[in-house]
Image (tube, rainbow, N blue to C red):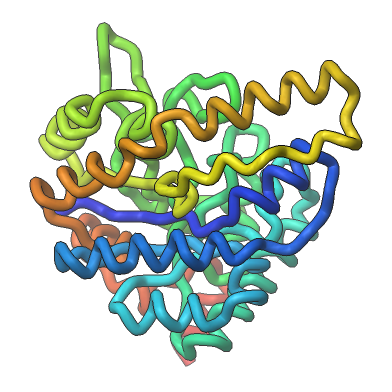
Amino acid sequence: MIHALTIDVEDYHNIFARDRLKREGPPTDAVVRNTQRLLSLFDEFGARGTFFVLGEVARDYPKLIREIASAGHELGIHGFYHRQVFKLTPEDFRREVCDARTIVEDIVGVPVHGHRAPAFSIMPATRWGLEVLADAGFRYDSSVFPISGRRYGWPDFRSDIHIMELPGGRRIVEAPLSTVSVLGRRLPACGGGYLRHFPGGVTRWAMRKVGHERPAILYMHPYEIEQDDAPLDLARLSPAEARAVTRFHRLQLRNRRTVEPKLRALLAEFRFAPMRDIVESALGIRLADFAGSESNLRRSAV
C-alpha cells in the first residue's frame, strides 16, 4: 500500500498573531526554513508528496514554491489567509481559492488540481464549499475529517476516497482524512497534533490499520518541526486573554522536538506518494481529464 504524504504550508507566526494576538502581518521566513527542512528530509528518503500552499505564502515566497515543484512534489491550495470556510461567504471563498491557485500556477506553470481547507472546515454547514470548488475547476478536495469533533468534523461521512455528486451537475473527488475505529468510535489519526502528542507507535499502528482498507493520508505543517519559543507580544490583550493565549501557545509547542524522529520512522517504514497519484490510483481516473461541473465538462470536450 502506498500512502499520501501531505503538507499544509502555512506560517505559524503570522497566523498565530492574526488569530490570537489581534495583529496583522505577512508570513515570516520561518515558513521557508521549515519547509526546506522537510524537503531535505523527504529527498533523503525518496518520498514525494503534496504541498497545500496558502496564497499569502506563495505570493511572498515564490522561490519556495518553485523549490517544492522542482523537487517533484505536487502543489495544492490551502486557501489564501488561512480563514476557515465558515468565516467566508461563497463568493469570498471562491475568490480566496482562485486567487491562490492563480498565483501558484503562474509561478510553476502547471495546473493545480487539489484543495485542502484551513482547519478541515468543510463540514455539514459548509458543504457548499465543495460546490464552489467543483465549479471553480478543482478536481479533488481533501478537507473532510469524518469524525464528530469539537472544532471540525463531518460525522457519518464516507471514509473512502470517492467521487461526490453535487447539486447542479457538479462533482468532485473527496479524499477524507484518515480515521481509526476504537471501541466503535471513529477517531482522527495520522498527522498534525495527533502525531505530536501521541507516541510514534500510535501513528504507525494507525497507518497500518487504515492501510488494510485504503491509503492513509499523513498530514502535517512545516512549523511542527520548529522549536522557536520566542517571547509573545501580549500588549493588546487583556490579562485573561493573555493567559489563554499563552496556554494555547505552549500546547502548540508541546512535543515538537519529537516530530522529526517520528517522521523519519514513518518515512522508513511506509511508501508515500502525492495525493494526485493516490486519487488516480484509487479511482482509476486521470485528474487532468476529470471535470467537476457541466461547464467544465463542455470546456474539456472542446
